[in-house]
Amino acid sequence: MAATVEHGLHRQRRGYMNPYFAKRSIVAMEPLIHERITAMLRRLDEAREAGTPISLDKAFSAMTADIITSHFFGYHYDYLSLPNLEDPVREGFKGISEMFHLTRFVNWLPLVMNAIPTSAIRRVQPAVADLLELRGSFEKNIKRILKSKDTSDPASKSVIIEALGDDRIPLKERGMDRLVDEGQVILFAGTENSARALAIGMFHLLENRAILNEVRNDLAAVRDVSDEDLTLQSLEALPYLVSLNCVMHPAFNTR
Image (cartoon, rainbow, N blue to C red; front, side, top):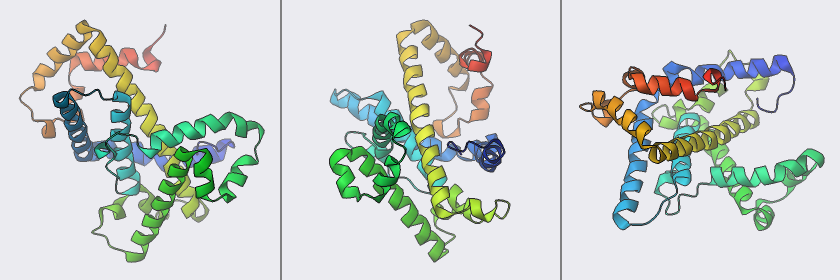
C-alpha cells in the first residue's frame, strides 16, 4: 500500500486494512497490549534495581514490535527479553533507510539485492540481513499454519491468515508475497513511529514536572482500577488526558 502510486488502487488497498485499525479491533487487542506493557515495565524495574541505564527508544521499540508482530502474524519473538533490546525490526528499518536515498537513483539495486544470498548481504548490512531472515520466518510460519489447518494455534487468527482467506479481497491481492510485504511495511511504520512517539512523550513528561503532576492527578481517578482492568474506554473519560491529546494532535495544532 505504501508504494502504490495509482490513486484508485491505493484507496482500495487502504480499504482492505481499515477494519484492522478500527477502534473495535484495537480494543480487542487490550489483553495483548497490557501483557507487553507489563513485560516492558518489568525490564525497567530490573534496570532500576541493578542501577544500569536503559534506552527508552529500544524498550518502546521492542514492545511495539512484539505487539504488531503478534497482531499481524499471530506470534511475537519476545524482543523485550533480549539483553540489549535491539530488535531486528528497528535495526533493519535503520539499515534500509540508509540505503533508500541511493535506491531512489539506482532503482535496479533492490532487484540485485533480492538475488544476492543473505549471507553476502550480511557482510555489508547485517541489520538488513536480519530483517530478510525475519521476513523468511514469517512466510515459513504462515505456510506451516495453512498446511496444518490447526485452528487452536493463536497464529491462525492473525491478520495475514485472515486476509489470505478473505473472499472480499480479490485473489490477486491475496498473494503470499504481497501480504508479507504489506505486513512488513506495517511492522516498520507501527514499530518505529509508535516507539518514537512514546519515547518523546515520556521525555517531556519527565522534563516538565507541571505536566507530569497534571497527568498523575488525572490518573488518580482510576487509582483503584488494576492495571489489567484499565481500559482505553476508562482512560478516554479522563479530562486532562483528552485535552492533552487534542493539543498534541496535528489536526488540532494551529501554530
